[in-house]
Length: 302
View 1 (cartoon, rainbow, N blue to C red):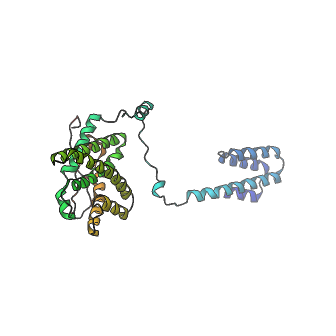
View 2: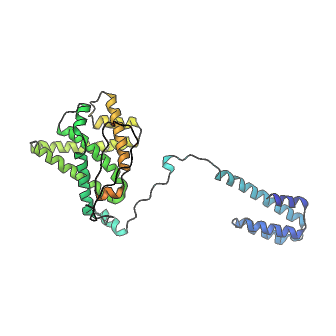
View 3: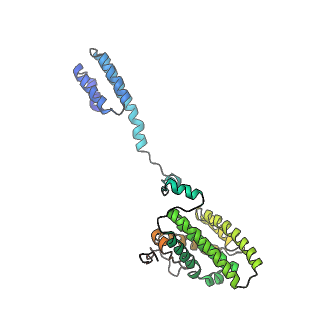
């Protein structure tokens, strides 16, 4: 651009002007409209040096004005919000799969459905067998009842659902059987405790309503700040009967670190084995959560 301006100032001969402007047309070939306009003008004014000078000056000014916003655009430093980042694309499925799933059936999955069902049962078993319920009862002065057990269990089931929903259609399929296993277990525990069938049915109906309300509240809390999560825990886990803010602080930290702990586990291992571990309620040694060891399973995924 600077060389072209110097040539204009020295007013070179007409052949140089034609060659120079032709090269300028080639360098701006992406702007085809400008090129055609300049070419036509050169053809009409081959013998007029002053006319060519005006044309080239106009083209220089036009290109210079066009380059300014381009440079400003490419050098803009904008901090992207979370919603501005590109979200991962959804799993691609065939038209046939979409049709049968719209009818209420489950289409072909990445892994065998039977293996996923077994993994779902194992994951739920980890929620009830690897959680120290006695520690929760003693730490937060919760009554040792079926309802208290269920409130703690549903919190851990919810964290498993949050993790598995990240694994696409296979993960969502697994979530259904985790919840199914939970209700089967609740019903069996109620029968073992000798609860009347009518009372048990009524209790399970109430638990179902509370479960889905808790899922909504926990989802909102995990996506928001600690105040919202603490409010969800106060309503759903402590049943609005916690007056000690330190208990809420412990549980907020517990939920955050467990979700992070589950996120570090490979999705394929979770879908095939369902084996998970839990961090302790109160850490004896404050340290960053390391990546857990991968569970082992045979060629059949068992």
